[in-house]
Length: 221
Image 1 (tube, rainbow, N blue to C red):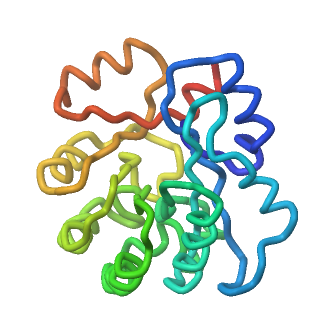
Image 2 (image 1 turned 45 degrees about the vertical axis):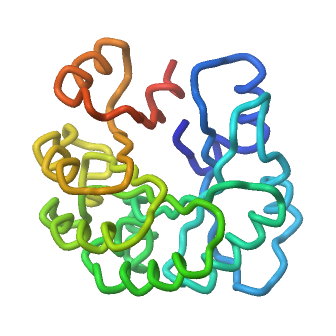
């Protein structure tokens, strides 16, 4: 279940997990704007209270362009019993992307590489990534794939749009297929799966992709 700021809070996750089955991970909305080494606010600690909801694993997500921040939060999550931290480099909204965070970092593979080099050395729990095909162009993925492949990333989730699209247009399955053929980490697909028919159409094209992240499709029904 994909994260949504202000919607898929700990209250939502708890209620959802009591009444619905079918997902095996619940991602938290991203944690951002904290300083490494500083204690988390009571509100943020409350949001990280549960490592599982009715048996469904909860995965914290971080939005940052600072390796030190990511490492510090990962250590906090490990101490609280979480088994994975997800790095959001896919958020498309300009107020985030203009600061080279979320999908705004995708045109800068050297920054991604520098962050991953430190994070993968120091983070002990599983570390996954949620991204888009690029920010300005899907061709940006060509420079990111060699970076991703240098590190033991737990999973890479790709929303098959570029950041500039936000949620307009249709997912770019051609560019996703190109990325899927070259990324070594387990790959998760995200984007416009709103019905069983949508899933079946995707599965016919990408039968090798075993992991799907659903978001708006679940929230809308």
